Length: 388
Length: 133
Image: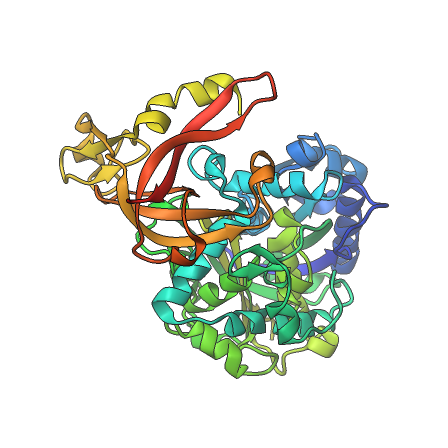
């Protein structure tokens, strides 16, 4: 019999180009903040999971989980790094969930951290491209951006999705990001700025792409029956699901959909006993504007091909049909790749605690996070509920 | 990419050698040792099959922020091509008139230089695509 799981603490660094902070600094800041928020002591922590995409190539440092554990004063606590590309954070959260639900661990810290600006921008993008198929995509000149661009072009061709619809993903996420103190970009933008931005890989321009950022986040998990004995206001983690697909985009039968996302969502909804219509908000993996359009379709919020028109109508704006990426998403909040899944969890907890400030969804009761690895080779979905 | 890592795929990169599942007939490129549709039934029946190199463009993009090896060529065009054998491949489009790029454009694979290890290092060759005459 699985135990119920609660999140009782959150911590998050500001996201951005954080020249003065190392990976270690970021991990410590987020971890200590979460521990303080929950009101737990170090001795109580049974296990630490850390999501991270590529510290080995970005800062030439492996074994980063024990390294961060060491510097938060917990060098004897078991710790492990989880790598699943952009879904590293979300998969780490799933591992933490299983540790608590199974009864193997009581108090678990799940963090995510990425330091991307200690290498040049071109090198960082090349490293990110390692989550696509190096030997059969990027060797031939395909960048990470170009693979999403080709999915965008296909979506436009098959469903009539327009550049204007895609631009409104960025506009909305910047609007939300402007209301998030930890976001990298806190400025609202107009659709014309997106449409007139320099091209990155057509049809995607600069404002269709999330930045590559530094940042870390952490959450504290505990069994549901213990949740009220700590300081932090608890939030229920109702379930999760993971899904997979071919790693190379060209091997997928359909290019306008992420099969990994729909598989993950199906499992998460089944496990939590919820449906897409129950969700008040969703943090989805908008590493590109087209990714958000595909995600809101594949998660079941809108029919295939309707994600663009729904976005343009404002159905995904704050306090509309479904509030999508209230944090600003990867686009405006920023993209510390391996931390993204935990950044999303932090937003979900803030919303369900009613502590999301100017971007608070009214009476938020249930929410979802969707975290994607590579160009869709893996996906993980978590579902959260308010405590009372 | 290291020399052995490139060298061990030469038959695929130069000649388009893929495989065909002896159970269902589906063709794969690059080769797989197991068919994801037939799995157990395909074991030992994944037979070599050459991809002739003709197909149709199903999506494309013009890359302005290139991979390091392609810096001198930016902007360049990438395409995904559905080959006559049913497999799809990703590659660069060359020798074309930009206004003619689009869905269903008929293309053929050609052997071209992809990059080089260094000015005095080995040269990587492989397939790119060009419009059919």
